[in-house]
Length: 296
Image 1 (cartoon, one colour):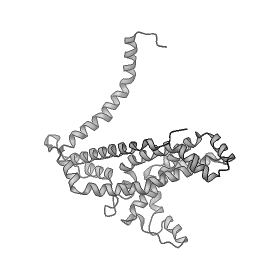
Image 2 (image 1 turned 30 degrees about the vertical axis):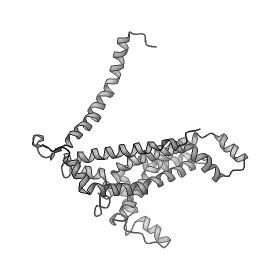
Image 3 (image 1 turned 60 degrees about the vertical axis):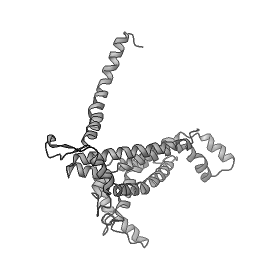
Image 4 (image 1 turned 120 degrees about the horizontal axis):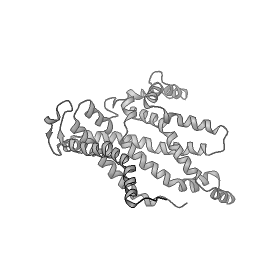
């Protein structure tokens, strides 16, 4: 119970909030506003800022009418179509295994979660060996069943699926833990009642488990759509947008224009286009929120 005056109470609140608010203003809000201003300029980062020319929405117009934006969005959409269904399925399967009363469960959790805490650089080196077209492990395994694997990261058609495989390996453990927490919250009385009624494990999974964890799955879909638009590390480290620009995505292109070509205004405009796209898609997703079962 606070025994001081109201003035002291408010002063205490302000003092405690000031560091967090200060960090937000300096490292979050200020860069956002500055990038918005830079997006209206023609400015090479190697030139003095005084040489920057105000060109209004010219950068936005060039991105939208230039055609390159739609190529990147096509690659990003391909990544999400390949990645999101599999990450949800694998996370549910992995969480279902971890939800069983198995011996050595802690060891399984460590094994599943190990890729999550590994750096993308280490992951890229591992997957470079796995996906190598000549002596890669994946092609060796495929050859055992009579399939000749492609040269994954050097083939424009298979490069993005190769990136998706690495991303699935890296991320599944993280999402499995989220799904596992949802599975733990399901009341076991539902399963006991279903067993009495003669429902098998398959029916219980699709009639009880999936509907009751659907809010969590919906949240994962939203999260993965947002993160899918921002995919960067695996593309940048594994393919650098190649081969033949087959894996160029929006954030990789922002980095390229900002820190390799040094067109900071052009890169800032693409950043804001990406922000508006994510906002628009997220609002559409929430329109479907009412269809998700929240009854527990």
